[in-house]
Each structure stands twice: as structure tokens, then as C-alpha cells.
Length: 250
Image (cartoon, rainbow, N blue to C red; front, side, top):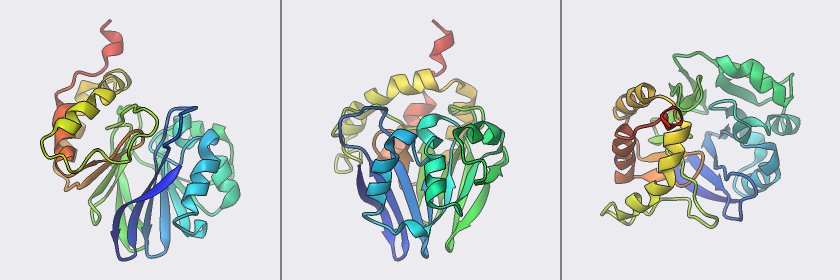
């Protein structure tokens, strides 16, 4: 895996750790937010990729600054590495949907410090910056959250925005292309994923309406490439008009 900066302003930084190699499992992006020597992991990944994630992380930050982690939902590519991270640092506080706490404990580390997020969301202080937990229920899990950093204008979107890209893809959707052609080509790799994994058009429209009110420069999914600039609104418009939940219409 490779680490690249997403945002940097003084001691406030975001990193993406992403896989450029041939995929043995579905590729997963792991993000880190830093503020005032305090760090939080976002969807730290599965058991299988833990060594690669940890190796990429130590290239850019000291592991000791990681004091928190965020788990958007219960899937193994999101959270099955939890016991390994806990073995490295048992002081990490794990923020996750309250509904999924008992299920996520099946991955192990029963002694880990869990902080259940209520359905309505909430916020937490990372260093001197506020991070908001934004409800994204049924996109795709029944209890699901995203995270928004209003100071950096970074929105971690979990599986929303995900694209299944070939090995060797870039971490960013081409920011130099203002025509939208790069987006149009990229989004074909996201279409079936969203139609099949996202079950509810009502939940999708509700989320699009709420998130469109936020000031977002970087929309960061857990799979695929980051949307930046005009591509953020392009994605929101595309997703709002997409019919999802196609598994029950066949």
C-alpha cells in the first residue's frame, strides 16, 4: 500500500492509504486524520491487509498518535483488523454504530474500548478539530455512518462513492479534467456497486439532500478514488438520480 496526503494545513492533515497492487481481496482505502498530535483511523480494514496498512502508515505518522478509530459499519473489510490494532494499542477508542457493537465484538478484542454512536450521530474532538459522525443508514448497512471534517472540508463516505477499479488505479479521480469526461468514465465502475449494494432509494435521496448542504472539497470513499472539486457535486447529482436496490427487481 501507498500513503498520500489528501489535505494539509499546519498540524491538521488527512492521509489516504491505498492499494496499487493486484487485488487478492477487494481493495480498501484507509484514511487517517491528524490534528495537534492526535490521530483517528477511518475503516481500518480487514485482517488480510493489516500488515500492508500498518507499514504504509508508519511511513508518514507515528503510530502512537492514533488514539481513536471510526468504523462505519460491520463488514469484515471495514473492521476485522480490530483485534490486531487493539493488540498494538489497547488505548484506541473505537467509534462505531451502537447497533453493531455486539456483532463487531465477534471479530475479537472483547476488552477494546467501544464507543457506540447513536442513530442520530454526534461528534468528537480530534486534537483541536471537531469531527462529525453523519448518519448514512441503509447505505448500505442498516446502521451506517460517515464522518465529516468541516475545517478540512473532507467527507469520509464509506461505501458511498465506491468504485471497483483495476489494479494500479490512482488515488484521485483526475482533478485536471474540468469537462466531466473523467468522471463519466470513472462512474461506470461505480454504477453496479451502488445499484446492487445500496438497498433504499428513500435513504439515498435523504442522504443526498442532507450532504448537499455541506461544504465538501474532498469526498473520500472506502473503495476506489477520491472525488474532489466539481466531481463532488457531479457524484451527488449522479447518485441522487440512480435507481438502487435492483436485487429485488429481477
